[in-house]
Length: 171
Image (tube, rainbow, N blue to C red; front, side, top):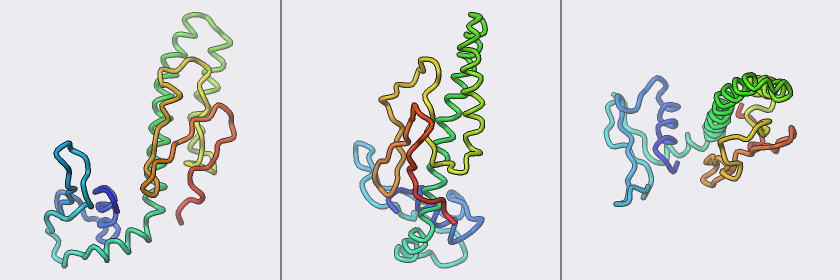
């Protein structure tokens, strides 16, 4: 556990139905330049059971870490998908106004592809194809997802054969 979100996730696994900000308060030390400068900690414990030790939390974290990573990656891919759906909505209207039937058809197909992305059996281990128009997002600005304390790019593919970011979905 390196960030407070991971500690909150772990505590919620240990104490189902518990909530940060009510049952406990998780904090994170920061430096004067507001960068994380240490491990997360429990600032206040309000549950009627003993506060877990760091080692107890770490054991639960290691057990549920793949689920956390899968969930966070799903959120990242869904956010990018949402961005492209919103952007393509505007681009579709422009193509229709310009009576550009080829681009209109391409954008409609792209939007269908985006809507069906979450139905892919490999989701969230999917890349997102480049749109059929010039996007406002710079393709060089790859979105990053924290995976195993490193930075692993969420691939933005121009072809339909994405590389998997995660090996397996959690059980």
